[in-house]
Length: 264
View 1 (cartoon, rainbow, N blue to C red):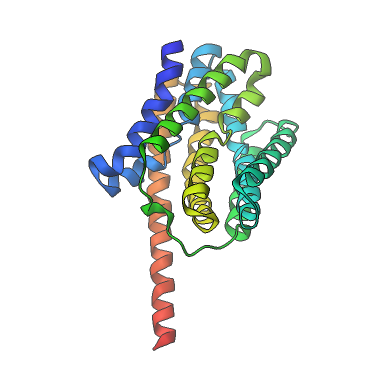
View 2: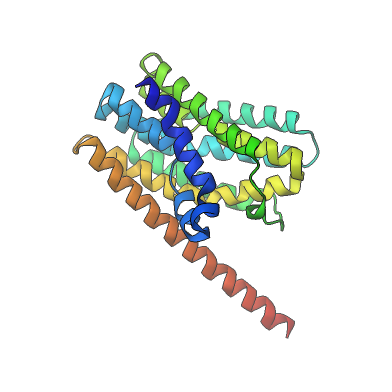
C-alpha cells in the first residue's frame, strides 16, 4: 500500500505533464481534464476504508471545488500587488476558511453539486482578467519534480490521516491545492502575476470534468465494484472535458467573428 501511495499520483502527474510532448496536444487536452491527484487518492481511500467511506469522501471532494476556487481567487487578486509569499498566505487562509465552512454543510450529492456550480460560476465571473496565454509555458525539470513530490506528499498525508480525520476531511484534503500552489508560485516567480492570473483562470474550465467524476462516484461506489465505478467516472470526466472544450472553442470563435464584423 505504501508503494502505491508514493508512486500512483506521481506517475499520473508525470504522464499528464509530459503527454503534450509525447503524444501531442489532443491527447494532452483529454488527460488534463482527469482528476490526476484527487482520483488516485479517493481510490486509495476506498481500498483502505471501503466504498461507503469513499463515496462520502467523493461528495466532499466535489464540494471542495469551492475551497479550491477560494484559493485561486485570493491568490489571483493578491499577486497583482504583492509578492508570492503574501499571495500564498492569502490563498491558504481562504482555502482553510472555506474548507471549515464546507465541513459543516450537509453531506449530500445535490448540496455538493450546487456548491461546486456556484464556485465555478463565481470564479469565471470575478477572477481578474488576463490576455496572456499560459499554456505555452515550458515545463522545466524542477517544475516536474515539484509536481510529483507535491502529489506524493498529499497522497501520503491524506491516506495516513484518513482514519483519524474521517471521510469529510479526507474528501476535502484530497482536493487541497498542493499542485495549484506549486504551479502558482513557480509561475509567479518565473513569469509574473499576469501569467499566474491566466493560469488560474484556465483551471476553472477543468472543474466541470472533476465535478462529474466526483458526482458519479458518490452515486456508484456504494452499488458497484470500485474498479468499475472509477473506470466509469474517468470516462465521464473525459467526455465532459471534451464537451467543455468544444463549447469554449465555439464561444471564442463566435466572439472573434463578432469582433471582426464590428471592425468592418
